[in-house]
Image (tube, rainbow, N blue to C red; front, side):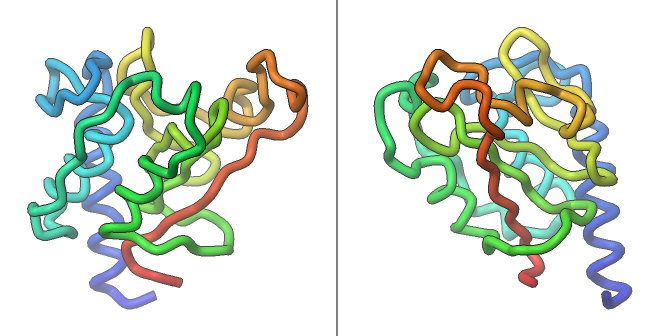
Length: 158
């Protein structure tokens, strides 16, 4: 890994940590006031200077993933990151499938630790492998109890 990439990844992680304790607020992006799991991603990458600041989170209903398979969340992420198939690295984005689509994500700090914004909890650092809600499908669906699907994205490619 090049020194520039290491530095950029560290800046993204530092930015994500600076958002911890920010309350959850749908489609908000004001540090210390409110952020959701999608706006947190773009805020951190913008703050770190890794994306050009022109990527915006399109408007969306907070419950669209309950009824539609539309890939709104991953389509947004794919504007500035690429899906990768390897172990997560600091600064990568991990997204989980909730209900019918991939609808929740966070920034890897030091795998399995991630920072994400969640309704009722706000923005916090979490162990993604210890949090049963992230590892196991808990919704009342036929797949309940099975491993929760997830994807990994990186701004730096492979």
